[in-house]
Length: 472
Image (cartoon, rainbow, N blue to C red; front, side, top):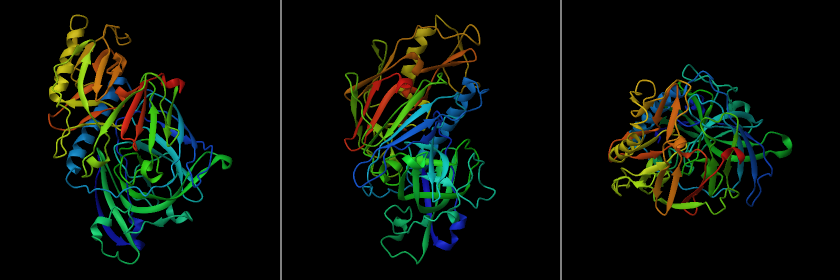
């Protein structure tokens, strides 16, 4: 999803670092880390507790959807803009894998991001960052920070106050500037300045290497040295509640790759549930067991960035109830030129479908409700184009819609109506949108609620099973 450019500069200039996070539409979750074992030469286990950040309780569902949809559309445009300008990142260096398990308490959404809290530097300074499967770079705002920085709840990280910070060498395999060197020796003491965009926002800064700490107390902390990250002192200003971003994509800069974690999983509580918790796992303990587990292979990602970062799936059809919709099997195919395809993304809220497929879904949902509820124009209040008027602002939607089945290669995912319709302020809307035919479609996190999902990067499969995520 991200576009970046880079410039090689002397290391003494790294005070001009900068960065920013994308307002990706997901449900914001604050992660507090509780480590149950320290990292060692073999696979280790790190236990992490996640707590949902509190959002504006006055945000209505239509407002949330409208803002989330705006960010989703900017995010999609950013991906298209960066497709021919990003370069492919280097391969992972095989770091020791860890397992992170996280409890999440869901609150009312106000922007839709999942925020991890980790600690950076020596002494460790905690900060909250957006967790995003659609990008790779790990970054945080850094001091000194000028007029182009956004407000954050935690103090700014200052690399000058950390005894373990160093500028990442320009010829490092994790340097975003390594390609610009074309194999030549870097200038003495060089630093890599980068510029990267995320949907509605951008980040610019210098790449560094630092020790990251996972854990909430001295007895159960795990410290991971030598993590490549972006140190930012300039950014766009539209990222609430975070101090940066943690990329969980396929590239070498992501936390998944830098920790050598071959798999990760999460289970998202329902949008309307503001009290329960859910779990995120990163590493060897991430697993799904039971008779309800279904698995589908990832589609091989294109070699070019940013598409090389994404997790592509083969969606072959969609059914509403027992009716298979007349959608071409190739509607979501990834083309040889890197266009099309469908990705699963934790950083996007509302699923977008190729227009030909979306129109079939829209028509099928409308036919189920047109004699029960009147249609209304929800474009202004929600940004969604298929909405129905409920009898009153506080009315619950009627239990009349069947489940929707997404037919992936070798695995069917069944979504209840609550996972593809959203209600609030007297309207009930299809929580999906259309995408230009031939453009990339995205399976968003609203449709992933109450689904335990496992990304097995080494085995190249996505597994999932229906779950009551509040109990995990």
